[in-house]
Length: 99
Image (cartoon, rainbow, N blue to C red; front, top):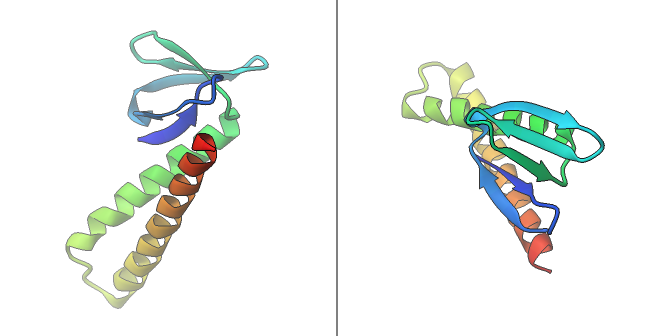
């Protein structure tokens, strides 16, 4: 899930696995796999960056189960730090939208 913002400044969580298409014309329009279209404030590039970060966090968090090598342990530490940064940025986004 990623956070995006409607044009009325309301943030919401979006299941990024269900995104079919992102267009900028000039507003950013997200087309979902069910055909529903959402207009959001964020640029397509920002949305893609959030999806990549979210998927990296999910993928790397799975490794929490059992790192087998010192390299995996170091990678896990970095992933957890990234997750921490992701959560801090998410909270800041939420607080900014409420202000």
